[in-house]
Image (cartoon, rainbow, N blue to C red; front, side):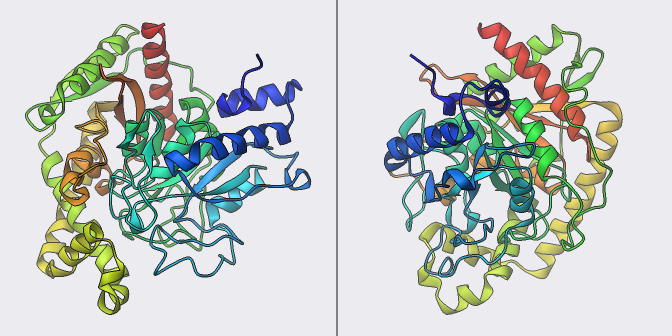
Length: 449
């Protein structure tokens, strides 16, 4: 029986098409069949956009690769509902977001928009308006969020890669819970133009892929300076693939330890320790390090997210608070109640945390820790707002610091739920972060073979 082309990763699919094993149209049709079969259960896609044969590009770095886009990111001709259809999505977007334009220029096929936690202000993927996005590994459980549908779609081979956003972990958390790779680049590396804001100070466009090499390819397509985005930074072009297989021999890698980290589930801690031992076996030096800034950084990130969200949605919150779901409304109201002093103190913490990690990465090449403290929880009866801190405690600090961070599959629990390993590098260090992630991915794969 011939393998389903949609089950391939992005890199292998490109090579297979070059060898003539299947056409670009056949790959697209395979993904659409997966969507038709699985989306009624998983609810990953909000909008499906099936191209005709004539609409499938034959040129470009991603020619013919089917991708999905979180429904927070504008795609011309499709509405952007942001998981909040009473407020948004009445009219199709007139222009592509910067990152979508980059994808299209590279020849990618946009298969549609993926479901998200309402206005991206949540990390469970439980949305009262659109329904929950379900985890492909166990549909009774959450997918994580807020890039819920993007992670589920990649994990279920409905597409070969997807875009998400990440303000407190919204790409890395669902990547961890769904067992895929999720990358949040350095703040300013990827343009936010055409992306509905959650927090102007913390938003990142993220990406979700089946493996590390695919993440390097996709980042190379969407990264770049955008003078029309005030958060974008002028940057040198980077080669994310050039040294991706160079390994980590001689690197000094910090393994986060201490009471704050130990709040994670025991199987997650064991998986992270196992990954550390494996990477030590290929020549890296592992140093156990307590990081005292993490609790304050997570709290400051949380406060800034809800304060910025309340500012952006202030008119909607004033006129139609009842149009928001209960968990999102509670967080928006809390954000509105924060004082200027609260916000000033959070910004001061942000400055201190950024300096802390500047000095930290003068000593260490990489930091590793769990992506989340818990695995995917059951959907039934879950309080999304109360559950959020358990998922963001290890991811939010690196939005506050603006550092590149990646979640990598690191095995499963005894009950079969994915575990995520988080790798963090210095600002603008994506090439070396991906190099390290590739070494971890290879070591973990060899160990489980």
